[in-house]
Length: 330
Image: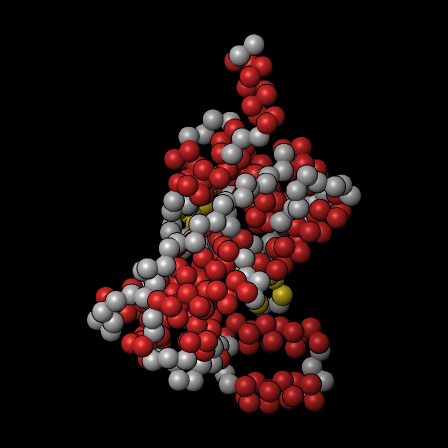
């Protein structure tokens, strides 16, 4: 469906006096079917080198997520708009100046480090494809960023949140986030067919880095999830669905964030951390490590490609040291 046909259909619905609820249902269906690839191509500036288009195509073939592809497009398009040189003429200093300008615009070191990583990936691809003989990013050192400790809530705070849930969906959502440690994007795409009730597992498919892993439902999550699913009569394949008429699309990240924020407000309490959907992932990792779960198993559970990422959760506080000292050294 193109824009003109969509506009014509929408105008017709309005003139025919169609009920608003039915119009919303039709809009949802149209949005699900709308092809945005032509719009996405506009992110590539006119005059961008053909290798950029081919690079993005190769990443798409590698089944990179739409979010990752959009990030690659954005970073590389901004670079070529800034440098304005043919690909073979780009030098290491051109890259350095671009990164310096990014810092001048106020971008954080971690963001500039990601820009450098994407540029390096592109130019390495160009060398492998024999489009260039040298990668100009190789001489630029990796931007080291000190990893800040992950902040987690305690179990009492989790129980206050669970008690503040008034709908079956919100209770299942809170319990699922904590039990599985799933990222929001992974939760959105999780399907009923991914659940193995006999083993109390959920298979997370195509997670970050296109990694598939198995995660687990604790007893609370199983009970609340079964109750939520039993309350639904739709045909959506997704575990958490946005039900409106015949539209059964998965929940989007904004809806999940709003649902968690509403539970926090309803609890009427202040918390030791800012509660977001991702905090539940931090919390289950922290609890697992403090209860003695081996680091390698936590890495596998969270789907981390690098164990150094998991190590961030193993940071200990002064209170941890004090308690251990009283236990082992007194």
